[in-house]
Amino acid sequence: MVRRHRPLSLAMLGFVVLILYAPLVRVVVNAVNQDELGIGWDGFTGRWFADAWGNELLRSSVGQSALLSLLASLGSVVVGTAAVLSMRASTARHALATKLLSVSRVATPEIIMATGLLVTLPLMRLRLGLTAMIIGHVAYLTAFVVLLVGSRAAKLDVRLEEAAADLGASPFRVLMRVVMPQLSSAIAASTLMAAAFSFDDVAISRSMASPTTQTLPLVLVSMIQRSPTPQIDAVATMLIVAGAVLFGLAVFVGRGIDAVRPA
Image (cartoon, rainbow, N blue to C red; front, side, top):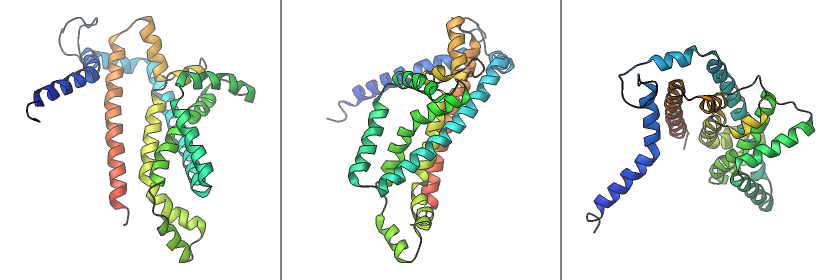
């Protein structure tokens, strides 16, 4: 029975893979295609990568995106991890309420979050720019961190904390020597996830950006709207490679931390 349906299963798998990766393959091919219009194959070239690197606006936007993703990921992980630790110390009702709020926040469309931030931040007398973008990204990403780190925290063995406390360890020492090492893999994964989400965000960044703070996704969207060029494909290819490396690093870091953690 299983063998009879195997060709159909393989065909369905191939169809899904085609839908998922065909656009990415097309982008990569166009990035190394000498034909500027991308209509047909006209030979291999690395010209578009050199042109993209020589574009001062693109280089500047990469720096803006990198700084934004770094600060936003660190901020969201700090706030999210603190929220998870607070949930563990609070009553079950309060912890459930925090989790439900995080789930509802994740389910809220990003454009609604961006609109809310756009009308809220001016009330706090914050001008549009990098600071506003960092606050917006932290508000957007914290819920993801709470859910990811919280799922790991729910599996912690409370008996280890109780044993450490019985042996005379202070609450702070229990937190730093018992709890945090067990959460380290989830925190590392959350940091990388938040950095990736922040780097390629468009909706919130566009709402919070000023004329002098333009991230790479915003610049690419503007270029696509004006006139698509192979430079865009070259940049997209580099982002695909960077994303693959980031994912592999997340898996490696998570497994590595779990492997060296004492039993």
